[in-house]
Picture 1 (cartoon, one colour):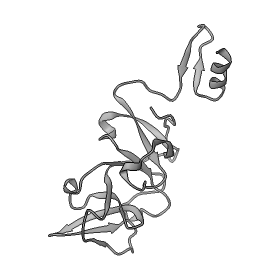
Picture 2: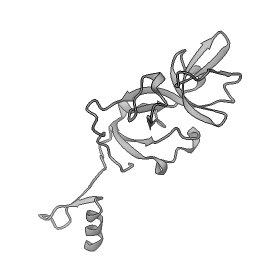
Picture 3: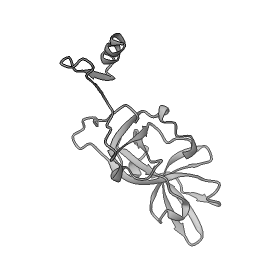
Picture 4: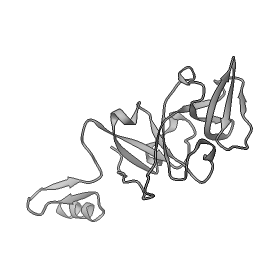
Length: 174
């Protein structure tokens, strides 16, 4: 058993306390009931029903009051694809589940329209709905039927490191 614990310690999964015979501490896991693990993806997932935590780039351990609703996830902004929304590469967007009737005019949403998965600013004009892409030169996409567009959620928060240093995060789901 000791060899197994030592192997886990060498891999960085736990820390052994040499002053105690069975003293170990699991690393990367916060057992505080007010903390939850929120997966972070490199790109917007295909749909909300298939958000496997194992496909996440990493996980953030966050206070559940900040992390939002069950099923929330982060997406890391890449390149200049979101300049139209004022986002920079490396920003983290928190996406929370939302139904179409919960989305207000001007909200930023993560959606899949056809084969395209992206962030859009949703706008309503009477009974018509437009998805405005984050790229400034891209034309808006009219939405005939919101049921044909897969709405993954509404962006509710932006996390940005101000000093350019990578964010400190737990890479262990819990």
